Image 1 (cartoon, rainbow, N blue to C red):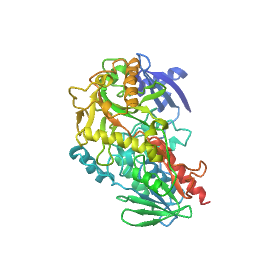
Image 2: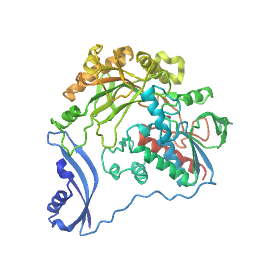
Image 3: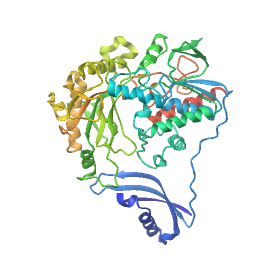
Image 4: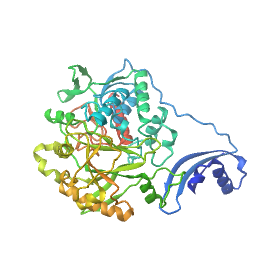
Length: 518
């Protein structure tokens, strides 16, 4: 017999199978040896009180042997000779769209402007060591997209959009730990994601799909308001009347292409701010109400949302035990992001702290039309680059100094490998963002005593939180409202915000293509 239990236990007990069995046996008044196995289905941390508890949902096998079931891939047939669908972009949206297309009997042709995971590493090293940015191969472009080197956080609030468990199962089938299906805030880790991404590529190729790297799309071919194929930078024409556009939120050349061709896109609200680094020990002490974190607890995250003058200011993409990375996608700009390895064992934590932007905030860029948000981002990123000495060093300021508008006398070494340069960040950020952040940090201190310290370092800017545009599509067919057969998809099109929601959207677009052929 199998029976589920909801229990709350101390962290040490949560990791001890024998003690958990004893607790359950006592609950149902049976002998401990009658419980053949316990399986943890869900796990979350309750750190609201000084005595931290772990919430567990457990499936107990009582007088019944446990047979572990492996998570396997869906049934795939060979699609080498099937109808072809072009996918522009090999990020989470594009890769999961490709898997779903194979499942539905279509041949995906995945076109990725960047390099494969192995070759991409050299270009990441060049950004850090030589301050050289390859426009096609960087932290945002290349196999796996920004998701490959953006931590692997899998938490999403997008459960209404699709089957989150299905995405998690596919990741597990391709090498992710089964814990991602258990933890309330699942995480893979930047060190493990590249291998998983490569394994997904091997699945696509094994069943007849195509993945082409170093293949930047420079035109989308349209005839009689219907997509007809694409042209690559090499001059190659690839024909198909179904194209999934899954380029990510930084593919500015694609946004500009759509505008030139008269294909409707819209400016949309997004968020912009800074990335702040604290010692992980400090965040642990604040969040866990202790001087030293227990060995049975993971490095503590935090999530804070405040309102300043009717404008949201909040933490974004918080990385416990992680580092800050250089994420520019073109020369002449500085952009930050953060990630953590699987063990989250770095001595520092970091988080984007960003301010809600509204369309009216883009008024001074009205002449740019739907690209107003893109130009807003560019101006800040380029100013940061100039103030950093035309390098990939990042403008930085101590946190208390930031709230006082004071230039920091010195900047301690941070996890941002290209280095920092001391700048009064109010020079880079628009006044309303700067002032909102200054007040927001003071409010953060009220919720997290000790957060506002001059040992914390502010890095600017954090500007690529989400796409500054939306590519409008029919809510039923998911095709572009003007162009039949063109499927705007994922984060770049304004329909996702992270690995899971992008993957779900990729699957949804593939499903709609399958329905269109019925």
